[in-house]
Length: 552
Ligand code: ADP
Ligand code: MG
Image (cartoon, rainbow, N blue to C red):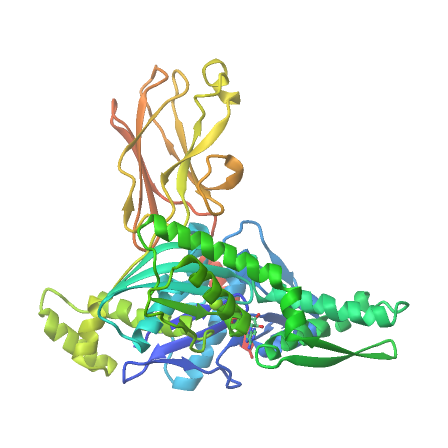
């Protein structure tokens, strides 16, 4: 069965597979687009529209549409209600996935079942799990979730194979998120060195600047007219703003006519003016890129052989220009000076995901007890219609990823005098057992803690994840993502009793916490209880999503 790669984007989503010649191919949707806008429109109770039609329908009835749902993935308590039915970010994303799968099924005549879905590199455990669940709700078998920059690197490597070790800097500016990642590629091995990003920064912010510019130009000319309360006018302004932004990537100046209340105003905007209006946004991406480069330097990577531009926004000429400046100023380019690569930047992630889906499928398949590896590769190659050498190369490929954000445990601060007199009121803080960017699989080893009170019958282990860049022990800079209890401790346990805690994370990002009180041997082991849904909830959401008739 063909495995598919899905780029479930903030603004646009895309599905791809690897063809008989071993090349990743994008599957077009029902209206022949490569990209399907990640917009869901709830037309009627049982009729849901996904894609461009939904994006257009949202113009007239924004209250019936959901956009940028990826920004809500993994957040607890986010809910939408349409026609009396409640939806979570996972179920909304599942509707988008179902639409992509249905389109691929129609185009290729094969059902879509095994998939790899991509996520931003800095997505934490909860967001990754939410993405996996969205796939399950859509009735897909999620082989893995893969970091978008790794997918982009795989796609780049397929187009420009190189045997020697290379360091890549991936700069991905999409519609709603920005991230930048340093990757090491050594033959078949792909490692993430470090990553940085901002999930609240993307093309929509550029659009907002252009929209404000347009609406200001209108009110300057007609101070007594106020179109800002008119939803249709404002939605139309969004569309115009985005079009202008895109056109200014190739044109030097563009015009649009705005009509409201019987008045018509022609507004002109030059690329120069557009770049001034949005300069601080681009600066923010460069600042994060620079921080990420410094982080890589501390890990021994000080030069980049290639810079890969990903995301539709990198079609803006200013991106490449400013990145070149940054790299030259820092001396981060080797003398032979590689270029900045940009090849259909909004499709690269889906292509890489398709390649990885095939790798995963090959690695999971086969029956090692009976056949030698060569025979296996041949069988797989046969079934997939690729050469045995290709299948062999695929099997050898390894992708190593890192702990996306620091993971720790909440403890009482022994520096606080209250810790001895009244521990329940003492300051608490987070100790990170697995720092961000630790390569996976990761293991903290056993870390020693001590009980704070006499006669503690239960010890509560709270697992926290750092929210943004940089490790901080402050509660405010971390979020609680799960907990477990060490119960049945012997009576009269004096305070200061040792407790050993181990955090470990496997390649797919599943966190296991183990705690033991060595004196009694009482122990607890739990996989992370993530804020997402349990199995029953997924099954329920699955039937709810399946009931709808989705059309694009
Ligand atoms: P995401 O990964 O967030 O889903 P994409 O990589 O598809 O998004 O990028 C979408 C963004 O790229 C949108 O803001 C879109 O307006 C922008 N974009 C697409 N083409 C161009 C272009 N030619 N010039 C500037 N921006 C563009
Ligand atoms: Mg993207």
